[in-house]
Length: 260
Image 1 (cartoon, rainbow, N blue to C red):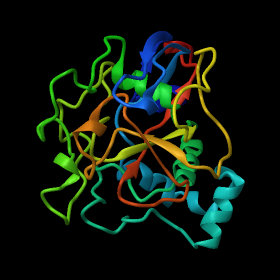
Image 2 (tube, one colour):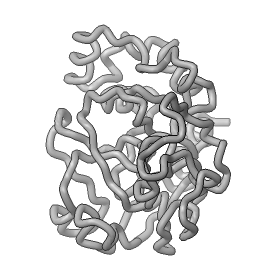
Image 3 (cartoon, rainbow, N blue to C red):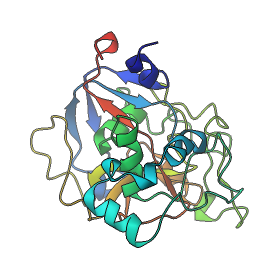
């Protein structure tokens, strides 16, 4: 296998396409717009603890080359050497998504892996595809057989845990991505925005203001209700949040199959 093949081995290549982004369900998901995306590859699953451990053990937290300047400053000031919950057996199993990672840490891992974070629109397209489905798996209403979430944001166990990225095989998106709804929300490249009015041309849209501003997350988590399982649902957090609500998956842009 070439290095490129190795990098792409756990990713799904999505060719360029046009789809309907947003919904009528919430004002922050409007205006609905036809948007066009260049080809990209996206991780089939969220980044797992096993995958993130490579970054930790290869000195990722000690090498400024992987970090944005403010992110490096943040982890140095706070003496951060590994994710929050790294030693918590509710969240640290090998095949569970890594959590307790700030946006800075997600970006550093992505650079270490020769990838980046998905834009909101890339994430939504990978989840929703071209058939305008409501949830990653289709239009069937969420049950705990589909995803790890909390009805009415009231988890059955307060001492909750994450689940394996493979625990819900029905939680499979239009393009075949797993675990895009529930379990952990996922960091995106975009800064927070209250709607999509900023997007004028609908071509590879991304909303960037400042690294230190709040960033969007997608997919909901084990503390979110069924509404957050929708492909179009949006949320955002401070860039430094390291709670057990958020993980991430990565993308590579402008991938065209064997041309990568």
